[in-house]
Length: 316
Image (tube, rainbow, N blue to C red; front, side):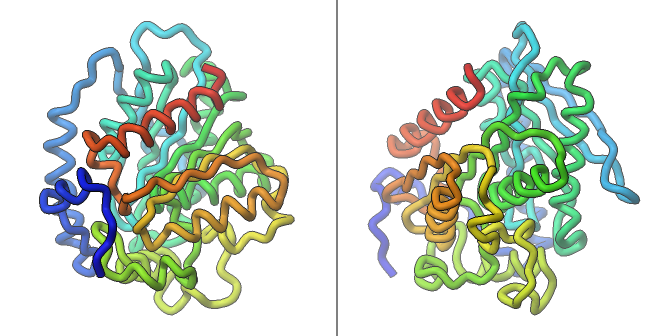
């Protein structure tokens, strides 16, 4: 199927790596090599990067957090707690390394990236519980880290955005750390894959219906996606309007030619119906993962807006 991609994005497509999680070992090895080179080449000027370990979920290993601190900034600082994407099966904090460096500089905030366990070796709820443990560890160490615990925003992309949405629900329901804002980019929210975009986009770049199906199978278990009883903490699209009430304000961005597009739009509408302040942005001419094409004007505009939204949410 031909899609009306933004011309700058279309020109970049031949240089973008194909994502095929059917062979997960190969996909992980390929991504690790690409990310290692990108991290080695990253400009860390003005940012101090370190890693800490915090207690993990009961009976599980400790959780690694990568901290990005603006050099010379006076505390207590607001924080952005970031959750990387990768279809629940790929990735590490390296995925968003350049993005986190940029956020740290632009917001003068502590940016924290959580290294959660991956499916299928560690299916739901392990990745979400790691994210929750990391958030609790951040708040418990807020004094030592110079963080204002009242100004912590969640940010995530793709599966990371789905985890961020689930974490927002979980933190509220457990009476855990307060979240002041949820910033969801191309969120993976609905295991049923029954929206028009999920049915239509079978051949889109980077992410398509097959990859989405494989990722949910890995995260929830074979044969579980689409069945009754899937937890809204795993698939927040399953949360009813009543369950969404009282959540912190949200910003939801979706890509035009992305199987996840409509579930993001539907979730924003559900949040609005629940009385949650929401801003929704459909980025035209884009596909899943188009954020990687940083030079494209449409991505520069979307990035500037994403930073402005977080700056406002954090009172910066």
